[in-house]
Image 1: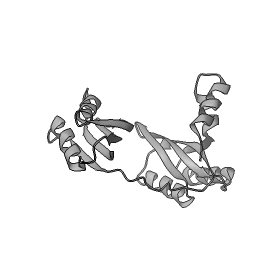
Image 2 (image 1 turned 90 degrees about the horizontal axis):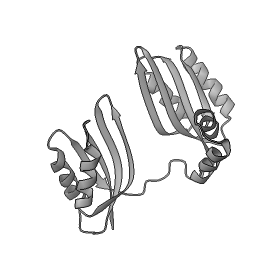
Image 3 (image 1 turned 45 degrees about the vertical axis):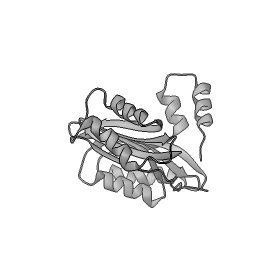
Image 4 (image 1 turned 135 degrees about the vertical axis):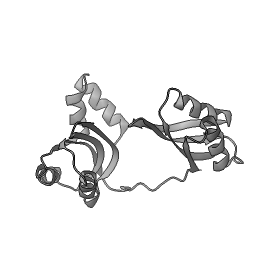
Amino acid sequence: MKRFVINVLIADRVGVLRDIGSAVADRGGNIDGISQTVVEGYFTVILTASFATDDITAEQVRQTIATRFGPEASVTVRDHQSPRDPLAGIACERYVVTLHGPDRIGLIKDVMTFLSGRKINVEDWYVSFAGDQVTHIGEVTVPSRLDIQQVQTEFRTLLGQHGLSCSFQHVNLFRVTSEVAPVRTILSETSHAGSR
C-alpha cells in the first residue's frame, strides 16, 4: 500500500474534481482525505490517496493527473509521511475565531503572529471581502492551559485599535448559535467528532 499527498492548483472550471478523481482511480488509487476551495477564480485542492500497489511512484501519479489538465495546472505529489501533531499530548479545545472590519496591509501577519505566539494552531481559515471591509472566520485549536478570556481580551485590544471587531467562540457555542438543529444533536455530533 502506497499513500500520497496530492495538491492541484488550476483556474476554476466545472469538472476539476471529476478529472482528479478519475486520474487517481485509473491508477488504482482511492481518495481518502480531501479539502478543496476556490479563491478568486482559482481552484485548489489538497487530498490524500492510497494505492494498492507498492511500485507506484509520486512522479507517476503526478504525471497521470497533469495529463488531464495540461500546462495550465500546477500538480504536486509527495509521499505521505504521518506528520507529527503540533499539539500532541496537550489538552486542547476547538474555537471559532471571527473578525470583521477594514482591511489593511499586515492584518494576516498580525493575527497569525498573535495566534502562533500562544501556541494556538490554525486548522482552517476563510477570508471574504466586501469593498474595503474584510471578514475572517477561522477554526483554531487552543491549549486548555490558556485563559480564553484573557486571550480574547488581548485579541480584541490588538485588533480593536485598527477598527476591527473580533471574537473567540467555543466551537460548540458557535454551532449552537449558527446552525438550525436541536442543540442536543449539534453537541452530540461535536463530541462524537472528538477533541484533542
